[in-house]
Image 1 (cartoon, one colour):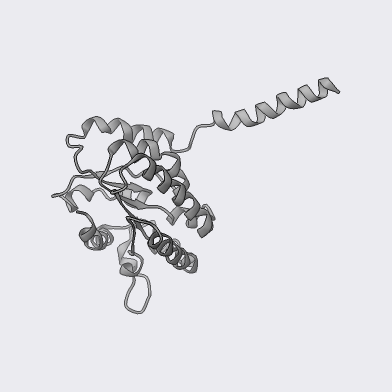
Image 2 (cartoon, rainbow, N blue to C red):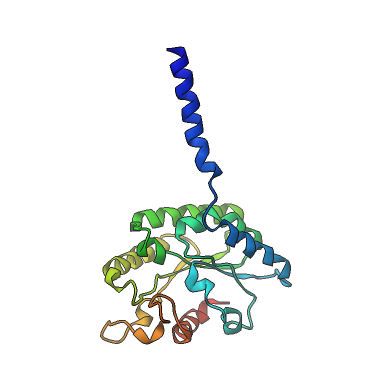
Length: 219
C-alpha cells in the first residue's frame, strides 16, 4: 500500500511538472520583441500599443502618430490570456504613460472564449498593471473589429464589445474605444474594402480609420 501511494505521488508530481516545461507558442516572438528594446532612444512618456496582429501589422503606427513617443509591442495571433502571460515582458518594463490594448478578436475568432473568460483575463491584466505601474497610467481597450473572415460571429463580437465597454466603465482610468461601428456602412453592413486578401487583417484604408479614431486619445 505504501509503495502504491509513493508511486501515485511520483506520477502526480511528474504530471504537474510537464506543463512547466512546455514552451509558450509566442515565446520566441516575444523574445525577439524584447531584443529590440536596445533600439529605444527615448523612454520618456512612452505610449504603448500591444495586443494581437491587427496592432502588430500596423507598420505605419509610428508615422501615424509621429509627434508622439509611440511603441509597438504587439505579437502574433495573441489572445487576452497570452497578453496576461507576457505582461511583465511587454508592458511593465516600458513604464508607459498610456497603454492601448487590442485583444478579444482571436479570443472570439478561434479560441472560443466567452466574454466572461476574456474579461477575467483582462481583469487579471489590469491588476498586474495597477500593482506595478503608477495609478495615473491610462489604459484603452480597443474593441475587436469586424472582418470578412469572422462576420459569421458578428453577434458574439457585438455582445463582447458591449460587455467590454461595461467593464471598462467600472474601472478608473480605463477606457473603451469603438472601432467596430467605424468600419461599417450606414446600414450596418461591413465595409469589405478595408481588408487585405485574407479577409481578416486591414489594408491602409482600415488603418486610416483606426488612426483617425484613436488620434484624440494618443496624447
